[in-house]
Amino acid sequence: MEGNYHWGLPVAASTYARDIDFSLSLIHWVMLGLFVVWGIYLVYCLICYRSREGHRATYPKESRKSSALSFLPDGAILAFEIWLLLIFGFPVWARIREKLPDERNAVNIRIVAQQFAWNIHYPGPDGVFGRTDPKLITEANLMGLDPADPAGKDDIITLNNLYLPLGKPARIRLTSQDVIHSFFVPEFRLKQDAVPGLSMTVWLEPNRVGQYEIGCSQLCGLGHYRMRGDVFVKTPEEFNQWVKEQSAAAKG
Image (cartoon, rainbow, N blue to C red):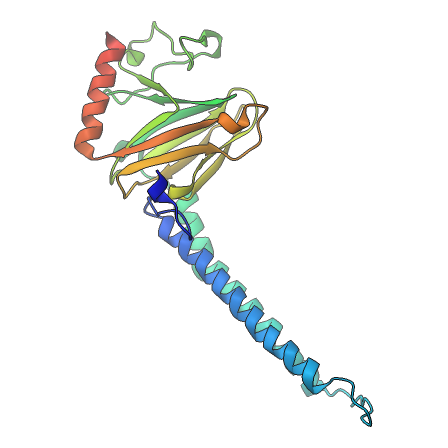
């Protein structure tokens, strides 16, 4: 995972990561440009209007035209911010947060956060999640999976290890057993709070094979520093083989 990080942003490993990176870069470059322009103007004013012997300050009467011109820089910045929101920001946000992929064409996953681990639940080859009950949660059954439910016989449960196929959308339902946690994978540009009693759905489509770190970006207790996991993005063939092996082990 060391190769995922460098001087700039981490590698972009999801389909919408580039859009988010572009917006960040655009904002930073514009802010840098404003800083340089206003810095030059400030230096110019300090030199041209410095206190000098024999020169008295004059205060010309301000006209309506000069007053209007003084608002041009603010108007330009406002116009840029409106363009950024309407033309770029809102469409990208809608695509990421509101236009979820169809469940039939996605890998469906449940993730339940707890102090201090990520419990990950796959429906297995049948594509149906087994019934769960909080009363059934034990150290050996972290998801509270009902052993009497036939749909759960081939379900796959992992601890802190999330496996995803390359080039296929993944729908993830997030919740928490205890306190507020925050699911964060920098390479995917994905961050979402996991809140007790609520189910939050997020999605991503990996576009790069590799291993990535899951972090909790919400202070959640004394063991917060060790609440981490790993994402393994595999080729479709490798992922399908992993599902078969894990499902067979669950049945056995």
